[in-house]
Length: 417
Image 1 (cartoon, rainbow, N blue to C red):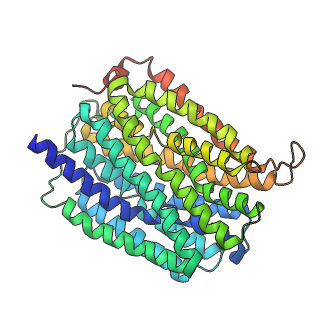
Image 2 (image 1 turned 135 degrees about the horizontal axis):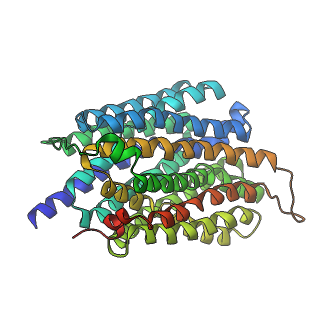
Image 3 (image 1 turned 180 degrees about the horizontal axis):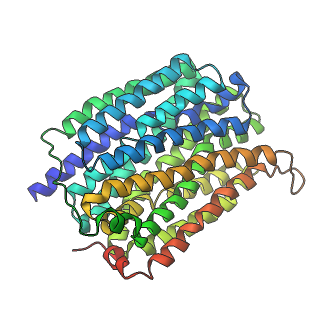
């Protein structure tokens, strides 16, 4: 019991650090309506800046996750957090057009690539399999809550003091989180490097169950990042259409988007715990099918009642991230510990590549269908755009169906006791 209490305290401290570090995560989305006007960007250009952040994340995430098998995670985590805070600070101080915003947002993504997956590996090292789903669910929940704060904090500050002040405050939060993380790593010793007789090829390249988990995760990332990246602009457009002033619409939309993203912090904990009991593949499949249904519906609600849109949005926000910790937990059960960092690197590469492409496809759909009215008085652009993320989400349950046909999936069917 004392060890369990100690592990829980350690986990909550790590989660607290991530709350501050995540303030730069999707803060660009909160201020996007202001930047589009100030910089004269169209939706496709705005989507490209979303995507270059993902490209930066992929570039560092793959490398640093792999190196976490060999280097001290503490050095990777703290350095990466400081990098992202500095890059975001430079964005707030010096970004002035599409090109400069593109460069500095990409540099911010490079820093974020060294915090999520290495932190996830820390949790997997600390908790046994029968507790891991819940522990990783709590960890991912803190990231989701941090993501929601990265919308509401800059949204409120930008409405009063401008978007540059908002970005500076977010960076200060990151520096605070990096400082707190030193307490997390006090006395930390990397786990001994364990090699498998199968080697890298057997554990990663030829490990089809692990690859199916990774592909399912990529499907999840396609839907989640497409939805998250454009959620605040969606509500800003809806509020503006209902006659709300631009600044007020921007701040209100950021708050609503933060609420819908933040509610996922509770769903990840619950879903992670349920997967310990009912199985990883079953939990993932049911959640993703329900989430895809929300994607197909949500965009068409832009011209309807605000309260109806919010109600569906709350369900959407709950579901779209709920299976995230289950994918990560499943991967830890299908790959030997000595190769887990490399596997997480490949997961980052494939998953965040989809997360990079999805917002740009979403923006393209908005531009391509901006004048399309499927029926009088209804603009179909947002409906089509959200449909693109729902189509990607359907691949997840297919991957889980294929995974259940492999005997190796019994290792992740339920948390081992």
